[in-house]
Length: 212
Image (cartoon, rainbow, N blue to C red):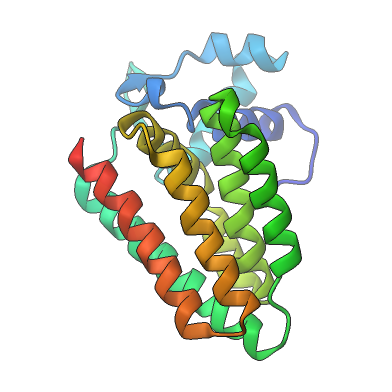
């Protein structure tokens, strides 16, 4: 969900969705409304309003007398998320190539940024770039409805990406190679190669997550 306002509720929503819910340490815990209110610089009321919005998106569970609970993602949901991403991203690859609009240069630029920061060991920054890399492709597909659906997966995308990095010492280098294969397929104008690289990338990420 895209919010353009600057209300306390909107700022709390963006903070929760972009910072709190993408932190693996938060999984399996209740969100402290007062801590969020202090971080954002607002009262607790707009924080509660933001949590209601997140509950409607199934990103938190509201428990009476306890608050908002961030449930761990079960294996089935992880598999379904990867499958959903695969459908959207493969569609975007074939559609953008057919329209001669594949964002090869932009995606390659993000990939170079990932290479630059990989040695820093900053998992969140690396995966934020990962999310940007894939979002560029989906945006190039030109379907705003699918774009919004994909954007709604973003916090889980970042969360799972960070977890995958934590579980595999070689995952950063593997991601770079997998992203390069996607870019190469797009640059060659070969939708089959691009789709194969996308599905391989998502499948490998899913396998790393399932091993945990």
